[in-house]
Length: 337
Image 1 (cartoon, rainbow, N blue to C red):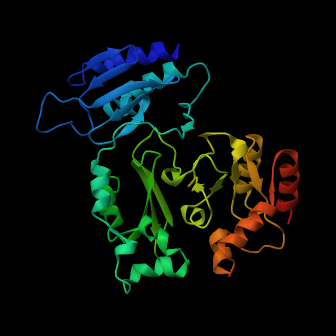
Image 2: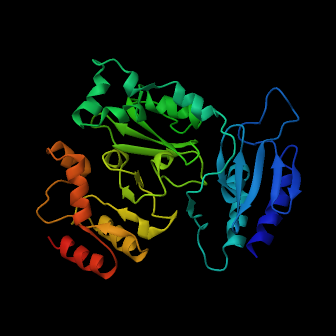
Image 3: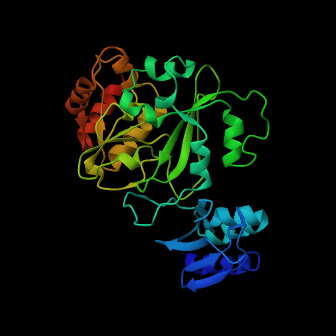
């Protein structure tokens, strides 16, 4: 039924999409409505609608925008989008189903997008002079020097973000510098970024993605699928562990053997949201770290700052990893601290 409705609304959209062609049953090609496609050639069409499992997705191979069919319709016609949502989910579902994140890299040749070019405008922390005030960010957190190239200095965060997503911040009042932490997928494509405040600016973290088909998962480009995988809450914590990624607020919706993964949440037993996510992780058959009661540090970076080495932190993790009913029992004891 969903494929029939998707096809119906694609046909309704087709008259608004320049150079629209049906390439095969679930593959359509047209000029991208976001970037207008090539400015040099009126014949190039690099926007595609394609099917993945039971859902349709849009991807432009010129500007790099990726999104669900629903969000493409919303961009082109908000009224039609309401009709689409009603028909697509009138069987009781209230929102579009999130696709499971697929770790399998494709063999598509990587090409620089306008997002890559925007990132190139910023200065990496390993290129900043030693005396640059922003360098204190990595010094104070004891971030290993080999990871400094994963951070970028952005002098005007709102203005720079608007160069990637026009009018994301309509009001530039109060614009300020931030650390930019880019997210890359398994193929090395830049699809999201986190802006972290240097000072007391709020919110402390602003995470933005410009490809709706991907989850906010950090570190995928460095992941080794043949080794155990550590999953932390924040990008910085992941840099102190071997073969680690960070969810950065995303759900644990990853297409991989969950028994190969160990979920590591912050040490906040009175945080109801964290406890709830821990229980969900156990239900999904992830391994789970339950911090010992004697540990007072809030997260992995705090442990490093307190004098522990990465190897010592890894040992604590290994000695306090549980699964199944045992994990639930330890979680209940932990939250009652």
